[in-house]
Image (cartoon, rainbow, N blue to C red; front, side, top):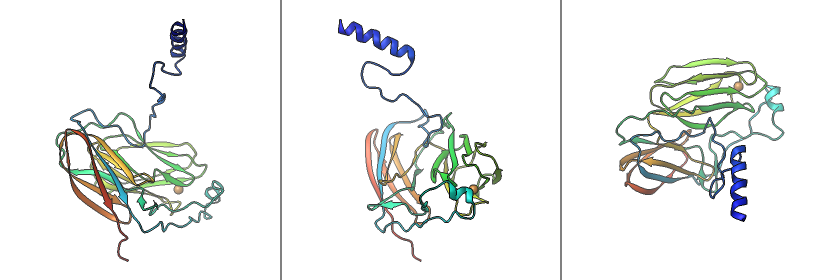
Length: 256
Ligand SMILES: [Cu+2]
């Protein structure tokens, strides 16, 4: 009797579209604009690279002085830190890690767009990746003027004002380029960096320094980690047909 009632309840719930019954589940929403695009269909594999980006020299960031634009200053009750080096407990965030060499074949960009948000007079995310040909949505979430100025060297530069809240524009980068810098011509503290690659095998290290690149075909690759001020590092990685390879990058302060 219980089973019958549970089945009936599940049927009702499913009709309402809230939850999937019968075990597992829990993921009920799929973000249209993901921070990291899903791997493209082919020729993907079952290999993975899991890694950590280390940096043991602390976090030298300082508070941003937003007073030049009272609207920006008024959007924050606490001081906002710069994001030049975001490190905690020896782990480095905002390193862009991608497969630089070793892939063959071509990969289609995901249908989902990637979002670069201007929010609280900062770019979110500060560091991200996008595939060539993927749609980039640039949004102004603030009630003040932003002027997004992309400074690529292999793609087309653009410089566009967004004077009103919730304005959006769409762009695409067609050539691989690591990295494209973005700045705001109104607010000199605003900066973002975006890695443009022609495959989906990239990631950005999180607050715990970790990153994961999944869906790789078996092969020998050169993996590169880029950081805004600490430079780049590469290492060779052999990925098998199944399972994950663990790697680590150790960044040190640059001279001067
Ligand atoms: Cu701005």
